Image 1 (tube, rainbow, N blue to C red):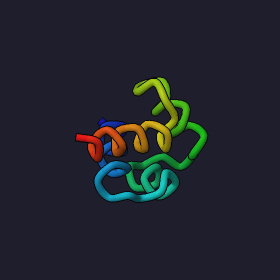
Image 2: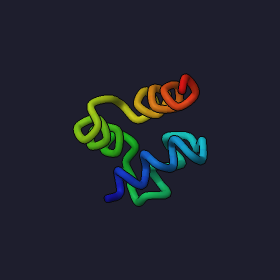
Image 3: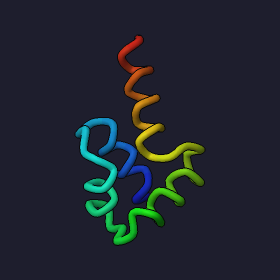
Length: 58
């Protein structure tokens, strides 16, 4: 649930990965990045950039 919220914030609000990690309740940026990549297949910044690019190209 937190990771889906984080993904939404990264895409829509344009917040930094650090800001988003803290906003959704992670104290450790490393832990956030590891869990995010496990859930979505890519690190947070790379995943968000990919999705934003897909949206722009439509």
